[in-house]
Image (cartoon, rainbow, N blue to C red; front, side, top):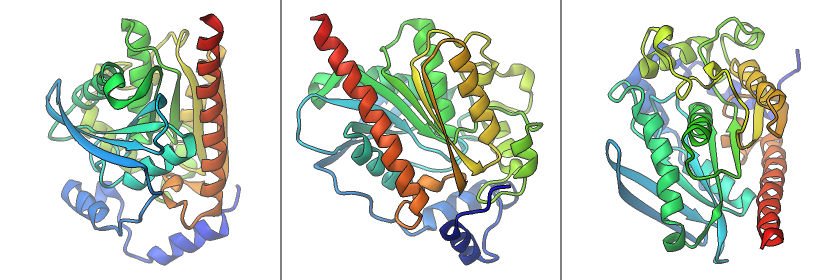
Length: 317
């Protein structure tokens, strides 16, 4: 097994005995623990703006991060992690800023509703709605409607994958690409990475099962591919994908297998596994060297995708 990076190991050792898995702590304690974490400042933006729009399930809060004053920037709809049960655009503000800085794109972070108060398909529908809203508001936001992508970390990556599937099926706003950051993509607890890292670090197999059941319900027979993307039999015709995984993560193998299936179906997929790190590692770019390297590489790939799409439009004119 690959050893943990020294800075990751030091961070985990510094947590001591204070860490309690989410499925043990419960909803309220887990939400409170996340909210109580020190809020690190992310990169400065040219402009940050909160908006509230009329979504499919009521008012939906969005936060728009513009990294520069340049007009006609591409845009990324970003869905935060937290298993669909914890987290907010405030809790993941730093990652949204890091993504905007690395990609050079306007990032729109979506404050979707959480389970168990709001079960499937609420968050899934709000994610899809947010992308359609972004396309419709492109001129007002000063972004390029022809260069819109989706991104998410952990459970948010599952939302991004579901949006990509529904976009293909229903002819929604065309997507430049989909970015999956350590996606918790399904319920399969038989994968080697689930067994190998059942007790973490950071997140456990029990946490995944608990959170997934709270959002999707206890019966896997009722699952739909928009909520569990691995259930989709046909993965052809999807937007290009960048799939990022961590070596020490129960979700690793499921995310990588989904990426490989997309590739086999004809989608251009970049599979990036980072050694020595755990689930959620990009949130610690201020202290983990591997996370900073990953952000630089991911940002370079994203910029290449966005630049290529801009060039292809120019060529067709």
